[in-house]
Image 1 (tube, rainbow, N blue to C red):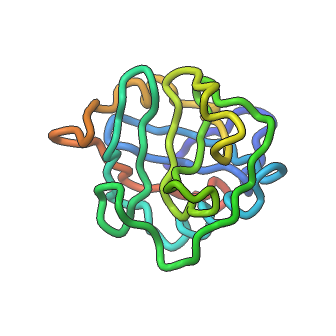
Image 2 (spheres, rainbow, N blue to C red):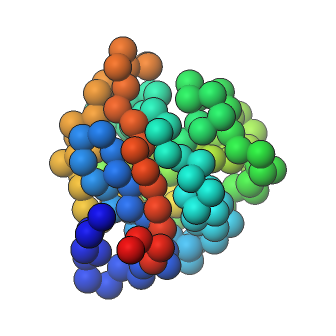
Length: 163
């Protein structure tokens, strides 16, 4: 898989997400959410996200994935939940945020990509990164809660690990 990173993107803090409709490159914000960035890289390296569906895709809002346990939005990883790392970084189109339950400190493995701005999420959810390439792919994801035939993460890797 030869995916060139945009200029200035650190391969140690970027994810290459191969989805059924194409490739998405995510720049992780390890400066504002170091615990969450490490978790996503750890799980990617363990192949936790491979073949995981986008189980909740809401037009004009976001596409959610990352439930490598059950695939339906109710599961997580075997690791403990993460303490919230809220910041003043706004939720705009292309922002990657960590999904969680009602408890702010309940993010684990699930994440979402914003289709549009969502200021109502600002300061309520951890911003973990941003799509730096492949928003056209995100826009192609099948919609639904869940979609009848959901798109999947075929493979997700830390960019530095891609050969």
